[in-house]
Structures are given as structure tokens and as C-alpha cells.
Length: 171
Image (cartoon, rainbow, N blue to C red; front, side, top):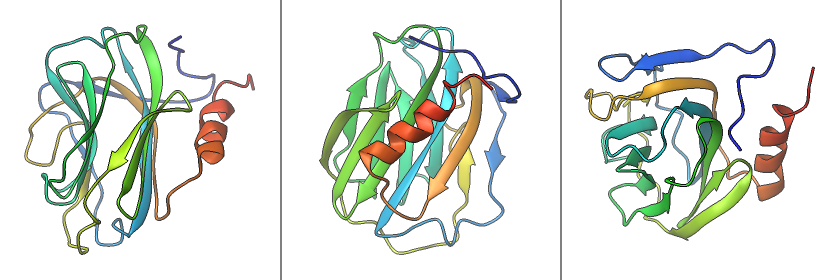
């Protein structure tokens, strides 16, 4: 079930046209193991359009995005790991990805929904991490986002679940 923004939290509204949030430097945001994700709110998850959650570079590093109602995790242009989001209820959902060596996992609302083999993480470069669209302006997000996170390690399933649960507890 989709949830609303927890009391006291603020979110960023992306208009689906030209809104973009980027890091000042992405040099340190690439490692053999990494985790990243955010809470994203949309009114329709079965949209046929494309929307980026978070990306480092355009295809050369790592990308986490929607395309035609499907969630994609891509590392270095490797075969993608995918999961269909068409059954999600409107509202906010927690999307998280982990990469450990050549194993990638997608979590939705604290539960692992897909896993598979990805390429090894490429060498670090200076490309920025973008929220909303890719830095090239492709796949702009029409929706809300909050609590975007990047970790330099592959979080365990229980840790991803704990991050999800902390926003469900009334404050």
C-alpha cells in the first residue's frame, strides 16, 4: 500500500519536464559494493513514460529508473535487473537497490523483488549523481521524492527493511 510523506518530512517535487537535483561531485560514489534509493511518490505507477530515480553518469556507471511501468537497475551497461511496477498503488513507495560485486538486487517497500547478475562496478569517475532525470535531461521524473540515500556498501536485506520501517513509525 502506498504511503504518504511522514509527518515532519519534506519532499522534492519533480515536474517531469526539466527539474534536476545533482551532487557536486560523484567521484566517491562508486565502489565494488554500493546501495542507493529513495522514497518516490507518483499517482500512477503503470505510466508508459520513463523516469529516473537516481543515476551516476548515463549508462556508463549505475542507473536506477522506470521505463514503461518497469523498474530497472543497470550497472555499466550490463544486462539489467527489472521488476514490473504496474501493480503498485498510488502514493509513495520505497525503491532501493544494492550491488555487491556482480550481484544486484531491487527492493520495493523493504522487500526484495528482483535480483540478478550485473557487470562489475566500473572505475570511479567524476560524473555526478543525479536525482530526477539523468544528468543529460533524459527520463525526467514526474512525482515527489524524499530521503534519497547512497551508501558505499551493499546493505543487507534487514538493513533495507529497517530503512523502510523507520518511515512507517509515527513520530
